[in-house]
Amino acid sequence: MNKKFPLTGIGSVAIHASGQQNADYAHLTPIYASSTFTFDSALQGSERFAGADKTKIYSRWGNPTFTTAEETIAALETFGISDAGGEPLQVKALLHASGQAAMTTLFLSTLKSGDTVLSHFSLYGGTQELLQKVLAEMGVHTTIIDMRDLNLVEDTLKKDPSIKLVHIETPANPTIQCVDIDAVTKLAKQQGLTVSVDNTFATPYLQQPFKYGVDFVFHSTTKFLNGHGTAIGGVLLGKDLEFMRTRVWKWHALLGGNSNPFDAFLLTQGMKTLELRMERHCENAVKVAEFLSAHPKIAHVNFNGLASHPDHAVTKKQMRHGGALMSYELKGGLDAGRRFIDALQMCVRAVSLGTVDTLISHPATMSHFGLKREERIRYGITDGLIRMSVGIENIADILNDLDNALKA
Image 1 (tube, one colour):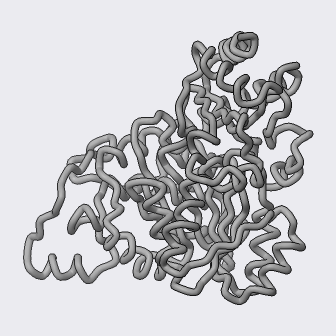
Image 2 (image 1 turned 120 degrees about the horizontal axis):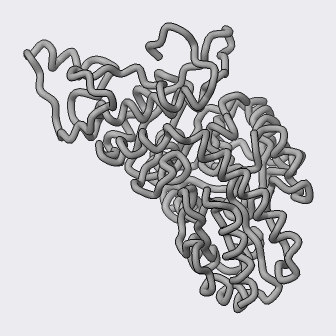
């Protein structure tokens, strides 16, 4: 970061992290809508191809607008974290066209046929299908266990030498289960394994996995980082800078999952209000969870910000707040859930999450429709489960809409 003094607040980092200065001194990094970049000479061209900076060659390889977003996310994920030598931790971020593209780069650059991924149940549906359908056909195996059971994690790691990557999604989608990043990473490192964390639900404002020694952090930037539902994107960050600049970058570039300048620009602007938005999201979520927990038509609420949640202690250990996601089931099951969703007047019926407005969806028929029913049920994704991404609207309006819909 090209600043004369270190920034002390993560909100400031979100606004000022990127040290890029553009040639025309624009206040904001421009949208570099160019597929390719020119060279002043043959020598300059060869130097760019030989160098580590690929941002001024071809936009599938990199772009200055991407760089601003990448530098900002890297600064957020490493804010206040030191490396083994006591210096500020350095990580490399690669912006992708989608979260699925970033996840694909992660898996293909770290795994080969015969390897196994160990992960927690109740994963994002796209991640689970990628692992169990696409990668399975390439000879990469997946073992799904309850990673909250640390004895089970340790036993599984010791018994299966084919495990090469431990992939953690916490909080998990849509049951909001939380895995102890620190404890699982320590067990994985005893076996010399690589650890990745999907930090989409928490964001670096609420949770910083690099603090616990993980190797990779992933985000669907479509969600809270962008915050406004205006652009699809994903990012993969890694702390092995050489590995990120060589093998990971090569897979990223050859798979063609690059972002585009306009979406990168929208992401950068969205991140500037991350701290303010997350505080309001989390404040509203607690009030919504308390309201639903006390409502006679609600069977149960999954929200890790409640003391009654089984993973509340882990949440307090590694997260600033419980977050903005929750799921809950009406006592009337699937039919009651459908009536409730149809009766909403302000809350939005939509998949995805992390936007400023409150989004409500039905995982069994939407985000996890690709999974077999018995598999969903085993992971806690029941037929009547409702997922809610609490927005930043006035809390009274959210609660009124929910209350009226529950009466329908």
